Image 1: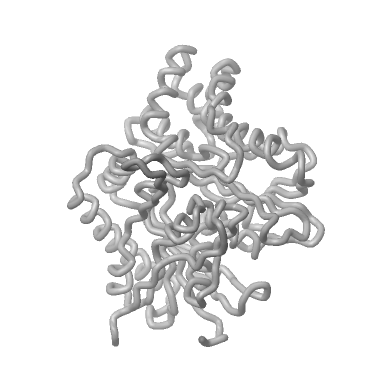
Image 2: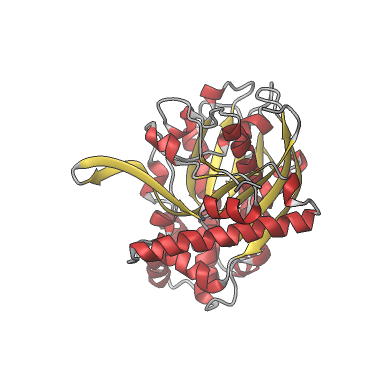
Length: 393
């Protein structure tokens, strides 16, 4: 395979299902001398009705096999359109793009086995058919990244830590990469970390609860708490926050992962009931969810990381990196740790995960494993993803 730099598009839609993030990367070499540069990124919103359908299906409301199949192919068309739109935005013809890495849209993720017909079974399902993306764009597409890790006994998540290791490993500084999407996840990189020393896991909710409450209280007029304006107007209710911090998920030792199946509609119903019990106004409850996000991250670091590893820097990415209340709480609660945006390392916060799947696709294309068993719990390395080749020209 060619050693020349490759232009790769990475595409991601996270648990918040805001839309499709697209990153353009130039990648060359191989670990430990892999070179990757983010050249630009764009974002495309989902139509509101389709976003609601994604939530409905992801939260295990009844759906037919036909409905799920149609959703998979419809999302494939939207991911393909997002890729072509990005090419126009970057003024790069699709023929110059060597590869697409598409995470797709997670509909179901059961990282830990549960009994299914008498046997412990773990599984995952991402939609956004890669064959459709390859056919519409004419670009070979890698998708369905998570099953290979689950097949080796891992949880299929988190996968971004491999990229964090390549980007942020430092010979002297201990670093934590924190991504604040729908779910908050961390990658812990001790100084001069070896791959088997990397710890990564989902700490709990990030934007998912905040966004759901904002949408509920504004009747869909707002999707998120812009600049934490609503939370800033709310009052703190310590007893309510204490109830949230008793969440059993926080006590589970890593490796662990979570998502909408846990922090979705049913959790929001419980949160609204708690709000009524403590006579919380809408902004009070939004503030509580925001503080819960920050303090659950702090709890995870104190409980599972800082007792063993000296951390100097916390590198923050994702939509939640624009929430000043979350960042302020992290800075206050983690004295001695420098809180930095990923943009200081050349990776815009909104582009981080899409950029990561460009790198993961590049590794798949070169038949190299890209999971970190220490992070996912897999029995060994796995070559991630399935390749859908572009039609012959």
